Amino acid sequence: MAETKVIPDQAIKEITELFHHVPKKSATCIEALKIVQNHNRWVSDDAVKELATLLEMSPDEIDGVATFYNIIFRQPVGRHVIHLCNSVSCYILGYEKIEDHIKNKLKIGFGETTPDKRFTFLPIPCLGTCDHAPAMIIDEDLYRDLTPQKIDDILERYQ
Amino acid sequence: MERPLTEHIKNDGSVLSLKEYEAAGGYQALRKALKMTPQEVMQMVKDSNLRGRGGAGFPTGMKWSFVPMGDHAPHPKYIVANGDEMEPGTFKDRVLLEGNPHQLIEGMIISAYAIQADISYIFLRWAYHEAAKRVKNAIQEAYGAGYLGKKIAGSDYSVEMHLHTSVGRYMCGEETALLNALEGKRANPRSKPPFPQVSGLFGKPTIVNNVETFSNIAHIIDKGVEWYKALSKSPDGGGTKLYGVSGHVKKPAIWELPLGVSLRELIEEHAGGMMDGYKFRAALPGGASTDFLTEEHLDVAMDFTNTMKAGSRMGTGTVIVLDDKTCPVGMVFNLEKFFAQESCGWCTPCREGLPWTAKILDAIEHGRGMMNQLDILSFETVYMAPGNTFCALAPGAMEPLQSALKYFREDFERHIKEHKCPWD
Ligand SMILES: Cc1cc2nc3c(=O)[nH]c(=O)nc-3n(C[C@H](O)[C@H](O)[C@H](O)COP(=O)(O)O)c2cc1C
Ligand code: SF4
Ligand code: FES
Image (tube, protein in one colour):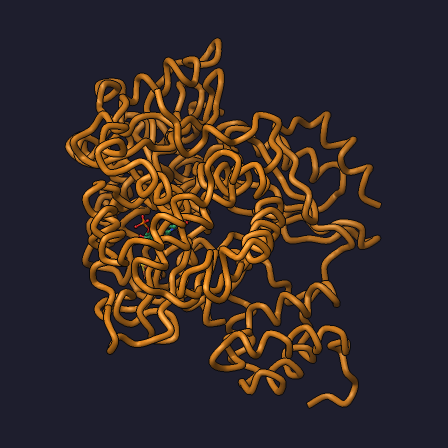
């Protein structure tokens, strides 16, 4: 186990508080990964190792869970994460135009982060707001009925 | 026309508070249920003919009846609301979660009482941040008012409730995979039997129902079985249904309507018909994993039996409309890309077959296809048919594909012959 602690004390406290809800510590794995990510913005190899000790699991088991889910980041992300819906109703309503616009504006494609670390750009399955397609989420904010024109204004709000 | 599930949802998009919910008669059904025996509550739900709203339409009361009851039953028993809603084109549970979370919570508590559950979970998908805030707050309000916790509402019955927000994966919606996710594991499905009712969360008896399903329960208890059955236009099941339409229609939205309205009524009346300049071509009646229906099916009643007779399924009841200006091959490619990405990788036909399917569709859509690939696609639909895979994800993925091959054959062939997408 790494000597330098990457999981902050506050996160450890939040995770240990969950233990009394569940029959075994490993059952908090997903919650624990979320907590670590809330504090650190992503889940590093060292964080996986520290979590393994805390939850009495092997690092591989933790990694198996971490890599299964779409929203756990095993690589650093930018200050803001854009999740653009690329599912069927947004396809019909033209999400590809929005994708192109963001690509041209930020000079990054899906899966990439701007050099200034301002944005990471990711596709996401249906956001459950198909009556207002195309749609995207930036961090935790939902934007709907998108047009290329709207995108410029919206991105300005995230520095 | 009565709309019990949505009538108290506010137009301004704000949430119904506990006070407002109670003023509208909320939690009276819970008090009534707590004076009945659990068996009586279960019997009412059985008699109501409520069928699950998560996609498969399984009769709810019957599902509950498999839970071991009595003094020797294992405890804790669990009850879980499935609010994963990641089926592309589906946006109905969001309306209930954001607009009236207490209706869901009350329904869950009554259901928990019926099977004598000790602990309940609401499993919510990652993207529903606003719903998560509102549900969390509503759970706190319900604890504050004594509807949750020890000896609820002056009875001897105790039940806890937790909110679990997911970290994103379509598989989490499959009920046994959902239980693995709740246990902190990868969301691979489990083999059945044992069924969750007998051995579910942490090996204990567990019921999983859809958010909309639970949202019906308080109304059944409150107003009775006959009233509930009469809400439906279909002999197929009781109650209303949340239907929706998306695509190039004038007024895409969700509406609560009698179960069994026609596809035509949904698209032409409620959704206001097609947008100017667009013509209707086909529709997926209930989300991404249902077969296309075409113009000849517009008068089909949107219930379980009739959609099945027409060669599809009601699924989630949220219709995705394909118009004449959208490429059907591109649409199916989009769908299969989604399924390939979301395959959990547990069984070979799906793990290998879906990416293969997506790759072929990619080639055809982008003018690199060959005629014999259409036969390969037909083969895939058999290769991943029900029974050949470990869960229903892959067979579901084959539904839009097999019907597209049937209805849009010419479009596939044109892509191949012209070496390009005719819509580009
Ligand atoms: C891949 C897959 C995804 C599913 N996603 C959901 C979902 O998001 N919400 C849901 O209620 N049911 C979903 N289901 C169906 C559930 O497995 C289960 O049948 C349902 O939650 C039962 O609830 P009900 O009886 O109230 O319909 C999914 C099934 C599969 C195979
Ligand atoms: S069908 Fe697909 S999603 Fe279901 S178990 Fe097999 S690999 Fe996993
Ligand atoms: S398909 Fe994009 S929000 Fe549903």
